[in-house]
Structure formats: structure tokens, C-alpha cells
Image (spheres, rainbow, N blue to C red):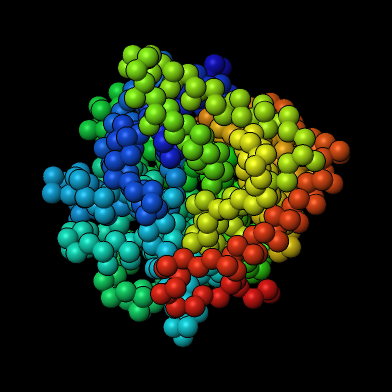
Length: 572
């Protein structure tokens, strides 16, 4: 008997854009995709990079959602679209009123950066993160950081909220509660309430110190010990969390109309982009899926019974069910990956934006065309030239900490650095050193997992860098001295979200079955070049020594005034 066609939509919110992927929920055939760049974010509104302030307006999210979902939904009969799931970057919390309306949607807060969503890469809460770490160890009760690698980061939920509450009295008074981006979208789409919305296990566990062993979120006594303005917030959140294969609800009448769908469409519980990407990357026990874009998230899953009570020090988190229900999800990552290479591109492009406009020869139209052409070609040409550099002729060494260090042992106050520059150093040599640095940072993560008793049996790459840069991927394979498989899907997190939606809608029985049925397989494998492995091992040792020197010699202003923080959890 022929089955009725069924389709699901995965919606993936990245740092710069949102994309939707329409997928056949039975076969995994990718029917249509659409991408929308955030308009306000693109022009740098509400951001101050010199202060590491990165905020996003909820209107960017809403406009993008309507655009991409409507575009893909038009490709099949609307009644056949049975499910939808959303993934977002994280931790990206935002304040909401008692009705769940994001404060940035209200006229009085529409232009206030503190009332918007605080993007994952925002590091304005360095001092608050240091304070959380110190008080978690000294307040006399449970150490609520112990399942998050033992070090809480300024990139995460409680640090950001505490910072905003202290900085902006108007927002502090107006914010009835706070929501992760993925949870707020779930609330928006289903038309629920703050009391009934199903919050993401993935988001709460990895970033908000949620754990079942202490009945959910950190104790009220600890939160008010940290900051009295946090009083009562715990009760306005939720101690109950849900895995992303579960039904959060159905599209509300309003949002079914706005998206061109029906109220029969199931909405799955939200999740984070890296974890959805790991699902699409066909992650299995002790695989590491590296989600490589502006930053990296490195996801490993392991049987919960095998890890037991072992605490993995210095990573971002270990949460039961955050990737595959019934398995432990472990997360690590780098705060800058593609962002580091984009930073260098912006440095090289400076004359295009500041000298070219003064040209007396070129018209403004020709200037704009030249800027666009050169910008599009720059990273490609730099990669080609860097790949041709003879390592024996260039000893430039870089640290990849331009946005701090996420793993191992989070320290967002750290800064990037270069050494061994000479009068003969050129742009391709520096670019090559930056590529090597992000690969050395990846190697440190693999080594930390294995030193902590979590073997990494295979490495899988997904994301923009994995798909587009052969030079970066070959360098990574050489540095890790491991093969790296590249997933076929161009939109892996969106595909992973679609897999969750297929389970929530009842088309697939569970996440692992959905992986097998909807997985797109692997496009290619990068294998280590034996001629490079030994050289990179020597340069990696230099990278580690350079990192220790810089870490010991630099101290951020926030750290100078913060209470001392232990380096990591004791090994157990």
C-alpha cells in the first residue's frame, strides 16, 4: 500500500543567517532550501566588537523565519508538511515579559541592546562568569558547574543574565523571565505560555547548569547568593526539560497563517545547532562531529552507563539526552574558527573600504563592484597561496584565541597572538599560521577528551568550512593525524532538526532510526599526509608553549577585579 507523502522542515538559526530545509520525512530527500541573512545584524546594529558585545534583534529572527519557511513550503502540498523543528546558536538568551513577548519587540526597548538576544559570542559577562566559578566552589553547597566541565563561561545563560540585570535597571524591572533563543521560538510558534512551554534539555543542560541530580536548575539559594536580582527567576523558568524528539505543540493559528502551513503541523522541542548537526552527521558512540563555521562545536555521544558518574573536566558540558535520547551528549568547541580567518580577511580588505572611496579614477559603481569581486575571491586566493607555502621557509606561529578560548578550560579573556614575524613575512604565511592555529586548537580538544577517558574513534566534519575549504580540512587531518569524513548535506544542522521533527511527527520511531533513514552519507574523506604529520607535531608543541606563555603573561581587566577562579575540576 502506497504511503501518504510526508515532509518536515528543519529551521537552522546560525550566527549570520537562518535557513530552512524541506525534507521527505521517510526517505531524507532534500526537496528545497532557503536562506535569509539578518538585515540588522548584517549592518552591525546593536554590536560593539571592541567591547565583545554582540546582540541580535528578535525582528531579524522573525523576518527570517517567515521568509525561509514560506519559500520552502510552497514546493509541496501544504497538508503534507507534518512537522517542524528549530535549532539555534547558544547560549543566546533574551528577556521576555510575563506574556512571553521578547522585550526587543516592545517600542520602549526596541533600540536597547540590553533588551535584545545576547548572542553566543558576546563576552561582556567575563566578570560574572569568573564570579560564578568562584562562588560555585566556595558558597558551601553543590558545585553547579561540575557537569559543565568545571568552568562556567561568559558565553552562557546565567553569566549573561546577571550582567544585564546589573547593567540595565530598566531591563531588569521589565524582564519577567529569560528564554534561550530556541525556547522562545518554540513558544512563539505554538502560542503557548511561559508556564506550559517545553524548554530544551540541550539548552538548559549545556548552558544553564540544569541537571536531574539537583532537581533541575541551580538552587535558588545559590542564585541569590550570586546576585540578589536573580531572586524568583528560577521559579519563572522550569525545572522540567525535554529532548528534541518530543512534541512541543502544534503551530498556532497565527503562525500557521504567517508561515503558509496548517495548525496540524507538529512543532518539536527546540535544540542547539551543533547538536542537531551532529544528528545529521550520523553521530554514533564515541564519534566526534565537528561543526565548523564561525566557531566550532565538537559533539561526542557515549552510552550513559559507560561514562557513569565520571566528570569530564574543561569541556562545555555533559548532558543526558542532549543529542540522542538515552545517550550522554558531550560538547566542546572553539570560540573562533571561520571567524579567525574572516578577521584576517577584514584586515586585508581595509583599503577597499577606507582608501578606495577616495579614488579619483573609479566611479562609486566601479568601486562597489571591485570591492565585491575582491572580497569574494580573497579567502580562496589566500588559501591557494597559503597551501603553496613551504613550511621550512615560514616559522610564523599563531594563537587562535581572538574570541577567547572555549575548550579546553574556558577562558574568554584570552587574546590571539602572532610570533616569529619578519620583514619577509607575507599575507599567505600569516594566513597559513592562522589555519594551523585553529587546527592545533582542535587537537587540544581531542586530546582532552581522550585524557579524560572518552575515546574519539572517528572524526566527522560538517558546516561551511568543512564543505568549502579543502586546505583547512587537509591541514586538520594532518594535525590530528586522523581521517576526517565530510557529511554530504550542505545544511547539516537543518537536516538534523528535520530528523527530530520526523520523530516528533511520528513518521520515524526514534532518532537513531531517523538518522539511518534520512542521513545523506559522506561526500569525501581527508586522510593524513604522512610527510606533514611529524612537522605539525613539532609545531603543535611550539603552539602549546606559546599558549602557556601568553596565558601566563596576559590578564584581562575583568579578571583583574574578579575573585580567583580554579583552573579546572580535580581529576576523578
